Length: 472
Ligand code: SF4
Ligand code: SF4
Image 1: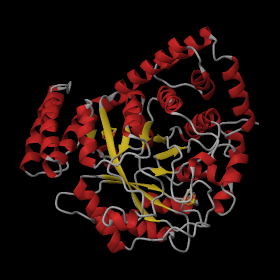
Image 2: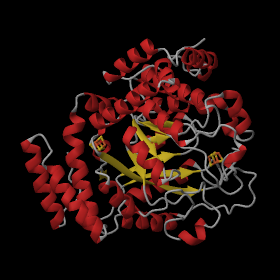
Image 3: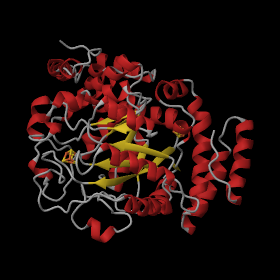
Image 4: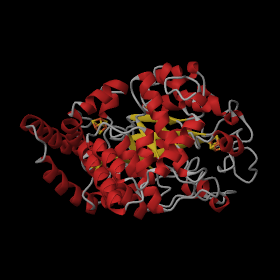
């Protein structure tokens, strides 16, 4: 019944295969020989199967777990260096006809103010985001064909790309909207979105149906097969994720990797990103009412095991997580984080009013983007506002072959430095600027190619003089 090449959800996310995987992982959680062989395979940096990865996640040998963390850190360094890509979510509408029991936007919640931003309001939000320094957004909406139709989303994307406030511009719009048809995905592709993101929430079908009792999202198969429709429509970059805390984390972990294997076997390229949200408090939502919450130690191990299982896949963490937790997960796998986020509709231009009670979840990390950038640099990371690949057409399998050929190291580093420089010149506080200039000078020396280094140096000088948007 299990078939990663099938287009049917119950076959590529096969319940029995997950149960067998979990049993296999349990049987082998102290099997030194097997665990060592899987770690050796992971060192080749070509990834692991869901079965192999599940054994490592279950591993109870302390010294081998230390090896797993060290390897995750090594792989992170090899593929991403010390760069962390920055983004912000933008909530357009919280109208929703679904009944997801873990989300305050569910249709039955009468206490939450409903809002859909007008194009004028979107402009204000985007200007506020540009004034913070953001270049990459993730659009978020609830599902409501009447109050938030696809035409509205398309118009909003056009509006966002069209706003150039002072030196600001949004260069990549990722989109997180409900599962839809191939026709609608084609429209999103034509609107030049970056990544299409859709979280599975849980791969466990029975739980899924209980957690989504009403609305179109109740249909597990339609939701689970959404990425196939998106990729069939020509969207190269898709982002998957589960909401940890809803079901048993080992089940979700195996399902997540099976989903990645499925996309790779059908389309020749796996997911562009994997997100790892954990359930958080919000209006009408108490995380304690869900039995499968995971503590920070398990959470960090999940991140490390994903990192070594899919080395080429970006990993995203939102401001749901605290500064402390974000710091730990950056070391073992996270490559992209949000900063200065608002999770309410209209939260950037009218924060007090919108934030009162319409946030989708509580933000643990409440720091401004400048504070996050400053903190990252203090930890030795380069905050990157780079969007070069998408704009150079390096998406899908072209992106993957770019990664695999090692080019990522030659391009990402100078691109990160140039976009950081733009941030420092246009938006940073004095103290952030000082740290950043020093960091850029030191990091520029690490660019291996003398030719690229000289060119990057020249571009950095021009950015100081007012020119923008250089990229390799
Ligand atoms: S998770 Fe999405 S689909 Fe579900 S209620 Fe919230 S906004 Fe609606
Ligand atoms: S060059 Fe491409 S892979 Fe590297 S940071 Fe920029 S967009 Fe990402």
